[in-house]
Length: 169
Image (cartoon, rainbow, N blue to C red; front, side, top):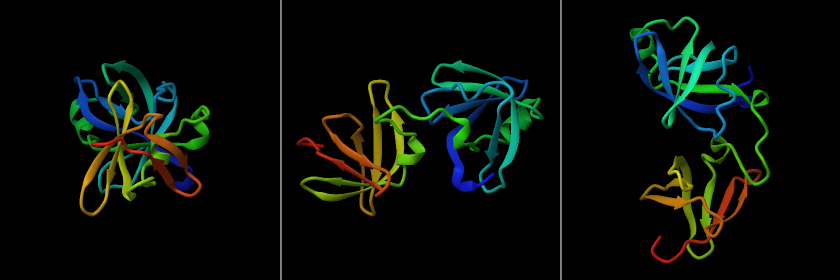
């Protein structure tokens, strides 16, 4: 698979139970891609990615518990904690208009109409009410709500997000 066509879709945050399931924090809203029979690439920290077939999945609170073929006990599941999960872009549904995959937003430069350059999107946080950009520069980190009155435009082609920050943010 071409690494340029792979999307980061989640991260394994914990082992679950004794049968080798893992808890995945998803980076996309729809979990329809984490269904039995689908292939994903699992990249443990500092190691090469390996393909796995999903043998089962279910939503559990804010995570998705998945079973992977070849991972049949807790200790082998624990070895995968911290791993990033990838899928080819073509295997995922197209985002709706004015929506983006988080992985397409991470790394974009954020500019404010008044302040100019603020930093780069380092991560995204889902709060329930709305998503939040974690924007970092060499001096600080800012949390910016990803809501319409604040975010004025997102241009993935130029790599820029234009925001209009309210007073105090």
